[in-house]
Structures are given as structure tokens and as C-alpha cells.
Image (cartoon, rainbow, N blue to C red; front, side, top):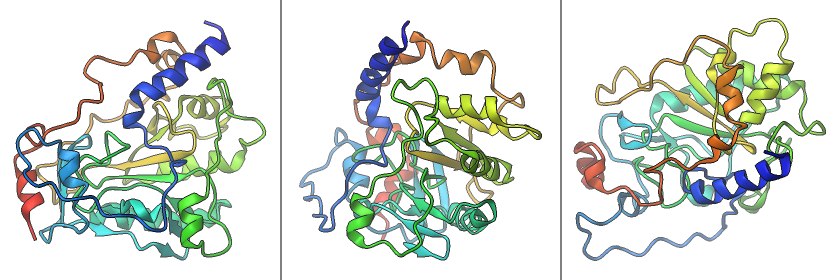
Length: 304
């Protein structure tokens, strides 16, 4: 397959499967309107319509329930919109919520960022106040253990509300989706991914396959952390931090442990083949119903 054909095919795939790939580039609004109430929700009402209308967390003991793509969140807490080394973007989405452990780790990582020459984090989507499927965007981010960080250092001033809703992140990948953009890629990105992957609490960091390819090629010396960088479509404007199930969440279902090899061989090469662009069966845009989530998520929805 030629580079042009690959690029076009990948773009089509992203459009088809884009429901699971929320973009840092989606614009927000300084005057978000509340969603209208659902008069008579029933078993066929998409779960995203129910969770998307909850603007406050469930006042329960904090715990992540279910799997990253099929679950919900009790006792969620919000990452403050401003910190010494972070600022939250797209406030209109109200997605700066997470399990307390996720918020703690994210703040810890943001505070480390200046030590590697990265001024601070611009934080994108985390979770909704009660987790669950989102009205638009991600397949994951449902249990409060995921956080997106823009591939752009924090500016040296506090951003206005309008800037947070309209500013664009940096696209690190080239137009053909085959490698990073050499005009953008630099050692500071390598340092960022390395810092995140070396954090013991971080289970994995999701990155565009082209970024993983560049890391495999460019990282010198210690490469023991590369196995935590997992390739996935999208993620060219932001990276995705995922942590493991917290000890206080027995109903949380974790992922298999990441393989210990670098992940720079055949598995990575697959992402640059036509097969990687085939939308898998079952990945249609058909929304999840409450019946697909853990039963306790109904209690999370109805809690005060």
C-alpha cells in the first residue's frame, strides 16, 4: 500500500471509528447549555444519555466500577482547573473528574514536568462526574482512571475561559500518519513519555503508532520503559495516561499486564498495514445500554 493510500484509508477509519477517539481539537464553548431532560428513560435509553446528564459526582465512597470501556465511577473528585503546573482545557465538557488516586497521580506527574523541561500539563478529558459512557468521544474514560494530556506544554500565563475552549494542541504526527513530523518532534517529547512511563503507578501510556515508532527509533540508553507505551489510533494531539485499578475498588476490572518486551517489532509494524485499518466487528457506533454496564452503575446514577 502506498503512503497516500494508507493515509486516506486511515482517515476513513478514524471517521468511522471516531466515536472512540475524542480529539483535543474539538472546540468547546464559553456558554455551554445543559442537555434537556429525558422524560421517560427506559431499558433502550443509551447509557451515555444518562451519564452525560449528571453534572455532579455520586456522594459515595470512591471506587471505580467495571472496565475502562464499560463502567462507572462513585465518589469522583475533580482535578482543580488551575494548578502550579497544570491547567484544565475544554471546561465546557465537565470531564475533569476521576478517582481520587487518578487525580493525585496526575497532580504528582504535572509537578514533575518542569524537571524535564516541560512547563506543565494542559489536561484534556478525564472522566465525567459519575464516569460512564460519554455523549461524544471516548470508548474508555468510564471509570475515572484515564486522563488525556495535550502534546503542548502549558503556556506561561493562566489561560482565559475562551482560550481553554478554542486553543488547539500540537499535532506531532505527519500528514501521512506514517511517522512523526520532524519539524515538531524533539527530545522534549521523548523526555515526557519516559517520565510518564517510568512512574510506577502508571499502568500504560497510549500513543499514536507513529509516535511509538519514533520512540523505538530514537530512544537511547535505558529503554526499559518502552513497553508501557502502547500504540492506538488517534492520540496525535494528546497522550493518554491510564492507571491500574485502585485497591479500594474490588469491582474494577483491570487490563492484562503489559508485555515486558519493548513492543518495537512485528506488533508495531502491524499498525502500518492495511489490516490495522479494518474496523473490527462489534465496534459500530451502536451505543451502550445500561444492561451492558455493571448492575451497580444504576445505583451510581440514582445516588445523591
